[in-house]
Length: 196
Image 1: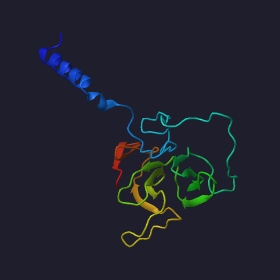
Image 2: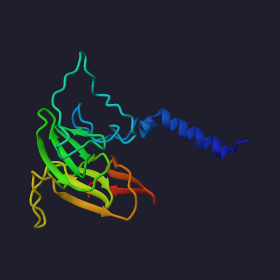
Image 3: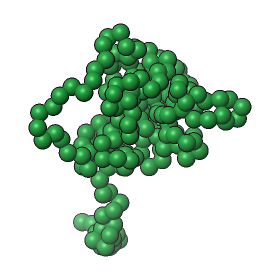
Image 4: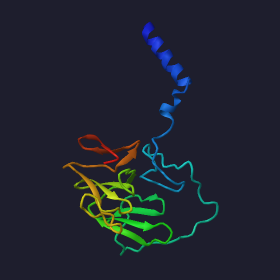
């Protein structure tokens, strides 16, 4: 038999839920999409729903807008993400940014990346950061380049690395939600501040 204290606590919690507490669990953590066509991380959001509620599918048949041959600097090993007008793809030892309309390569960044990138807001930078895991750890790569900072030039055409978190462990693909970058390691769950 529950104690009076437990009944009162449960009643108070239920009343808080009716009075507006439903916002505490009101869907998945925001993925940070800026347009209705953005797909900022694998499976769209941090809950992994694979659903963008603001987007609609094609009404008629579809046509191929562009494609890359096997000689391009990437070979799709991880799911691509779309942020604004740029499609980011990881594969064959590089991160490649394509123009979503023409398929032109905006930049390619060499590295041992193996996960789908996740878009992370970067208030300290002009462009957002792409968090991607690899053999050596987690990398923060400029989504659009940047500008000179702390005496180190960040080239807008190459998408130079912004930060690195190195550990001798296995990292899963990162997800981003509410200002925190999450990645599962063989040691446990790792959370890094998105603004880093």
